View 1 (tube, each protein chain N blue to C red):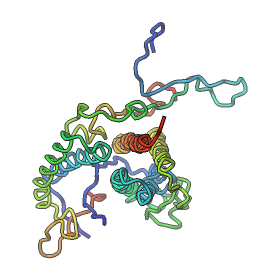
View 2 (cartoon, helix red, strand yellow; view 1 turned 45 degrees about the vertical axis):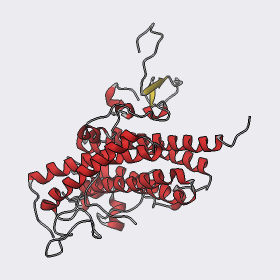
View 3 (cartoon, helix red, strand yellow; view 1 turned 60 degrees about the horizontal axis):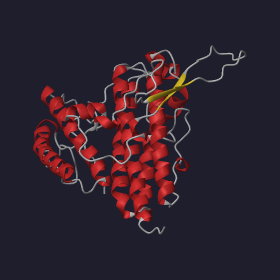
View 4 (cartoon, one colour; view 1 turned 90 degrees about the horizontal axis):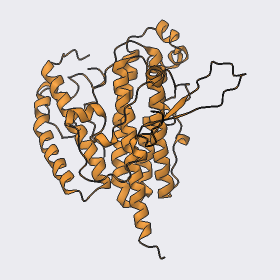
Length: 189
Length: 88
Length: 81
């Protein structure tokens, strides 16, 4: 089971009321390479992967939920007291019509999250390579978000999240090496 | 609903816990792929011990950090009394 | 990068020169770049690497300087992507 902890992984700060940044950030909430997709991808793959790497998938998948909460916090703070007029001016009029200021799992273009964003091939190497690619794509997304944001406090949190993609990618690469070694033992030359 | 303002001490302690827990996260992922690193396991256990010292100090100001019996409750039930992480 | 120096220092960013057509409508960006962060080079992490202190680790996003990858908006850094 999972136990919620009433604490953010990182002290998220936002300096300006800026709903337009929230519109972009939602990509990492409900987008293809976002934190929800990451968490669900890893926690689903772990049922059919060799035991040696189940712990890693469980722990990274769990950390992704902490990142999802960080993104939600950023979006929440950026839009908390935004008026319908401000939402409209920020390009969130269509969002407001459906959701008021509620968060929703969709990407920056408003496309709702779908399970087809994630894969589970059942082949450990294929799945781990997918995970490495997912981390690199999420890293890139954070870079493009940082490029568009002029909020230094927000960027501080985004840089933390980008760095976590780097570390997760490193661990998935190590997981591949662990599984390669297992296969190597059975090889004859 | 809850309008309880948190004292400065809370924010300092929370930052301390975030730092300690972050080291624990990093060591956890590292140990998942390096299960035989004795020094890292020693460091992990030391940090886990320190975490257990820190948590009750924060809960004095903030109430329970976890549910389902991992934290104690005051009276009345105080899970919802302090603001939530995205609010503070 | 210094001209004439053959040994290249390790960098986390690489540069290339895209083809520029005289008919490109936008003013050309002559040098483009992309990130090549440490996980592409580290291999299986060796034990006992130097660590940050807990608070610095938190604010760096990693416990190990060897995995730290700084990032700033490149359009502000040098005016080039």
